[in-house]
Structure formats: C-alpha cells, structure tokens
Image 1: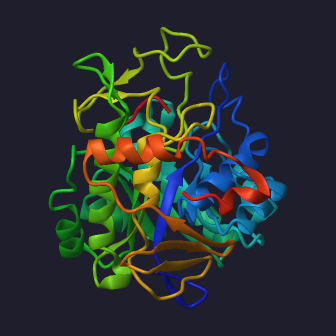
Image 2: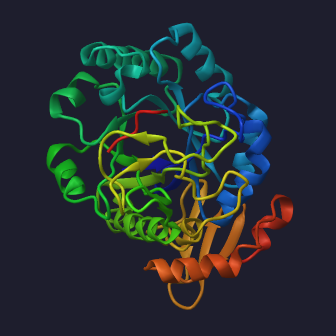
Length: 368
C-alpha cells in the first residue's frame, strides 16, 4: 500500500481537466481559472486527491488545493512529442510543494500509442525512459504510470522504476476479479486511475443521471471494500471526471453539449458506450449532478487519520467527510437511481464556492 508521512493513504480522487465551454484540450486547460470553485466542491465531496492530464506547475493553484486538503497526481508526460527537458522542468518547478503526491507518466499508453500513434514497444520504452528521469530528479515522490486495464507481468518487469500502477477500468457495475488478479500477480501498489459512468444513454438517446449516480455509488463502494488500508490491494480510485468537457465530439462544437463524441471500446453502465462529453460529476457550469452527491456519500475506508486527509467518522446517523480543511456532514448514501436523483434535487441549490462552501450541507478512452 501507499504511505504518506508514514501513514497509510487511501485516495478518494477525481480526474480534473478544467476546459471551459468553447475551449479545447490541451490549449485551453485552465487550472488557475477554476481552482477556487472546484477545490471547494471537491472538498465538500470528501475528495483528497486529483489527477491531471497536463502538468500542474502553478504553485498558486497547488496552494489552493493544499489548503482544501487535496493532493495531486501530476501527469508530467503523456504525449510522445514532449522532450526530456520539458519533463525535467515540470518536475523541478514544483517537486518541493506539499500538494504533490506523486508523478504520473503516460495515460493508457498501451491503447493510444502515446497519443502519437507509436508502436506499443516504443511507448513502453518511452515510459521507462521518462520514469527513470523523474526518479533521478526527485527521490521524495512516487512515480506512477496509468495503464488501460491490467498490465502483464513482463510489462511490470520492464518498468521496474514505476512505483505505483494506475488502472483505468470500465465494466458496467463491477470490477469483476480485477483486485484478485492483481493480488495474485504482484505486491506493487495500485489504484484506479479512471472508473465510473457517463450521464448520457446513447442507446435510448436520453440523459440518465440516475444511472450515472448508481454506478458511481456501486463502483466506489467496491474500491472501499478492497482498500489496502483495510487489508485489500487497492490504494484508492479517481473517478472520471469532475466536470463535463464539451470539446470531445470531433464533429461538434465546443460551444455545444454534443452527443456524438463516442469513443470506441465497451464498458460503462448502462449502455456500454463512452459518451465523451457527459462524464462530469458536475455540469460544465459546475451544477452538481446526482453522481456528485452519490460520490460524496461514500466515505474513506478507515478511521485511521491519513496524511492530507482524515477518515470518515460516524458510520451511523452522522456521516462526516474530513480533510485537512475541515469536516463536512454528508447525506446518507444513495444506492439506486431514484434515491440519488432525490438527493440531488434536495441539495442542488447548494453550489456556493469559496470560504463558505465547506459549511454548506451537502475500457477505454482514446479522445483525451
């Protein structure tokens, strides 16, 4: 398992790629523009870690996240056109900031050719080279790679400089035997780099926020049930994703919420279709979906205090989600679409950000 400051760590996380309406990745990713509002919303949901798809090298943004009890898995290299000098700059700029939890190299590189159409073996070699560089520059932080589904033993052996593996996994309402297979293969720590469901039903051509909330609740509870801090193998999970991204339909407009941005593969509940512009726990204007409240209702797996995050307290009538920034009372967990939709309707107006926000009640992706 992962230790932070000598204490076992379980990540209740989210993938964060804040692209505004009308913008596109990567040029319009704007951490600074959204961090105040987004950090408050993350804190209210009990989130203690996030992962970026571009390097987060702005110390002011990191300051805000740290103040809200949130640490960062910063992706310093994913696209093969980035040079080693570029990677070195990203690491050295912020490696001493307390909000940095670990570095990540690559995202589903076994699927996407390192976003440059490279052969698989070249991607593997590039990931190995970058990981070695990062470790030579910073021995204080772990280095992860994020892989599509489960790596093979020979891949793990080839990437011996990788300390932690992130697994992106989409299979309706279950992780199946993923955790058992991992335990049988290795003692290396792992976490879910991506999981979840989108809010659009492509088969029935309609919004289905209840199904998204249900999947969020069921899958997150499975991660908690297999937590390394409680004797399992999973060091946490980062749900995909915090907010909708409207740029992903290549035939649509980034100013319009399109339904044509469908990635290949199969997996998410209920339609097994990746509806790429509809994954947010929040809408693009930061309106919480039922899935946001479903995620907030699932606590951390242990009452043991963790670095950067304290565990959930009060498993009975009162549920608390606590981070370094304080504790928030959570609603009861929702376990079906009707419950989740009702909880969302009851608390939808509570969308304030800033200093008062914490006081309010509460397999496969190729396009990024």
